[in-house]
Image 1: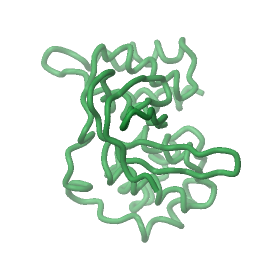
Image 2: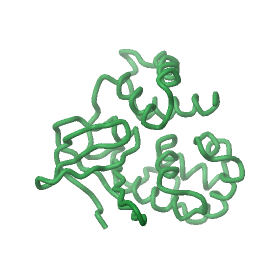
Image 3: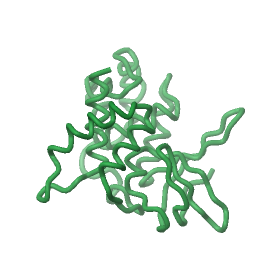
Image 4: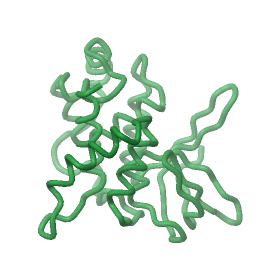
Length: 205
């Protein structure tokens, strides 16, 4: 298993990045929140999980080891594949996701595109006793350890939403709504804005 990659960010796309390690460019599928912290041409460390299928090998990247561990745990629930697990982590940070599962917060879980009430109930039933601690910090690591924020936040947020399958119009409308909370006294927190945008768009579909 490839547990992590550490190298230069050689390319960024709406659904992933290329990290050059020892002269080899590794394609890494990342959540929008992780992508929002990467900067082209700079060094980054990503915790990774390799998903093997009959016809593909996909490397998923995360801001820290705890997020990767939760990604892998989520997939042990019936009906949760890597794409849905990645979307769950795009909508909710690890601690909030653990809380939602441990407390049977179906409303929070169904805010994730692709999860209905029955699916949320199944996830709670299968993972509630295995989800781990929900108080305090998740791992002792700062959020997004090893990656760096990048501007402009509007473009990052729009591209991230596009990478999740939302149309340009939907993305622009969501960005306009969350933009009212951004000011000189309250700088843009792209991952938090992304989670709110996905929740807003999930309600309108």
